[in-house]
Image: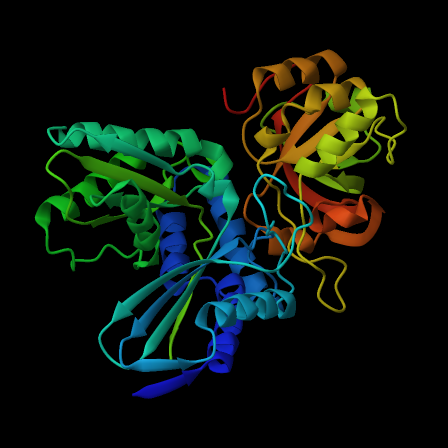
Length: 280
Length: 173
């Protein structure tokens, strides 16, 4: 049995919060550069250029890529042969607080959604999973709310046509429009229950935005490609001012579901899709 | 690119067309959700508000804390439509310009036209880049709101896009 201390976890989470917020993911940056090269619309090109320049200033000067440094969503994959010395969830929360303070990130968290009150650095949405092995993998995804506010879930009939599902996803993208900072990464969760589909849609954002061949299910790979192509024909473009670059990628995750249902969730990410991982 | 300085005059505003790209120099004030709610509540109750709105520009922004040696942290625009319900009232009190991201409601477009104001877009999701155009920052009101407080920013050559002009023409139409 391997022992990991709460302090190690706190320090790792703190570092990940800073890294995710100031150093844009390589795959996202590359996708932005590809979008810039492909873009024909002149204004869209200027905006994409500003977005790429912003990422390099943020990294060089250790500034947050976006002033909305998000609500940190922390994914923990805990090996079942690990024993945590101390309190895991409290260590994650302390790591968030320390990283957000040290990294000059924004205190965007309110304790109670109805009472609101003063915003603070304390808190995170935590997803823990038990896996085989003796490691702890930690991932921090700081989620800005300009795009999070545009998330939607819909419960389809099991007999729904794939076109209906596509139309729903495309409508979510249209509704997100200029407000959610396109070009987007569109996370889609299909299957499970309403809550699990939402979780999958969020988790889909962790996958590389490079079009990957790893998707073994052909129908899913095809769905991703078709959606991306159709979304990039909407002429929403960067800042919603027109252009090809409306989405950098569509990432779909699927899971088993009930014979009576077909839950579909969409989680939109702005162009500043930030996350960082570390294995302890 | 056209250069514009604050305070905005009606003549200056009338010369701007939706789609124009400009560089703004001068003073602007940050305010977002909670500050809008407080300003609006105070105006409705006939109380004095902590900023003079006449001919001023509000920037929908809640910056990150300034690292040592910098005037401000990351400071890009937030979604403007969340401020829509408060905007016509502020425009009626003399507010001349707004900076944010995204679309506005029909009511806001009507009020912009009626009061001869202008709505600009700043580069969305580019808070680190925008910080380079901000020279000085001063806390003006609602300190307890932290990043949502009202700050006065001195900006130099801030690149903006005219999204809704004083005739009510929108870049999104």
